Image 1 (cartoon, one colour):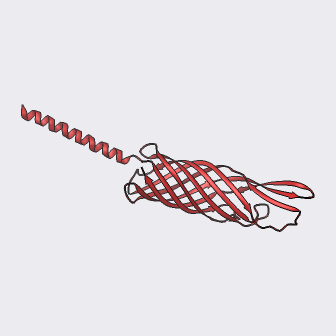
Image 2: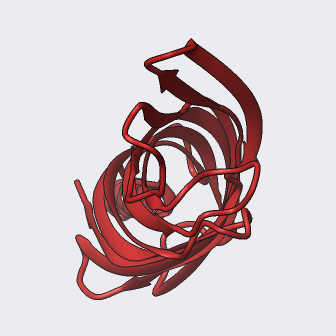
Image 3: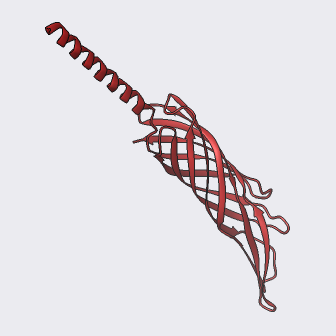
Length: 211
């Protein structure tokens, strides 16, 4: 009788222990929310827009075992060389605010590759440089803000339980309208609209802290 009770208790303890192990293993597979910061380079598709130094930061919120929602805030400047019918010499500043779904191909492991897909809104500012003109004429150019499409891939390399090094390659698809504004003291103001392909390849390296 006593041996039978002891055997049942042992079986119950073994079952409870197994459940705890399963729960622990399951929790370890769940993605965790994180904060990240990165630096890198941007390589615009538009021929007269030069590559720029990129920096940014963001947050990722877990949606399940392998899926997370990521917010990214990025900034870079590019020098622009004058091209007929396009932008004049100057500096183009790009500030994308991006939202994407990120899918981890292996959960949280020592090396965790992932892919992401999303969209966002891009703020653009152009500061025109020197140009040759008569004193009566003033030239200004503006690049419009607008939506963008965003996709890419990357990988986390775990350094500690809460800290990872990561690298990313992404593509920002962005078509932008622009206009040249000519102010002539004799003939008034004239405007000419044109389009820019500000699509860019982005390469970034950074650190990610998991909560």
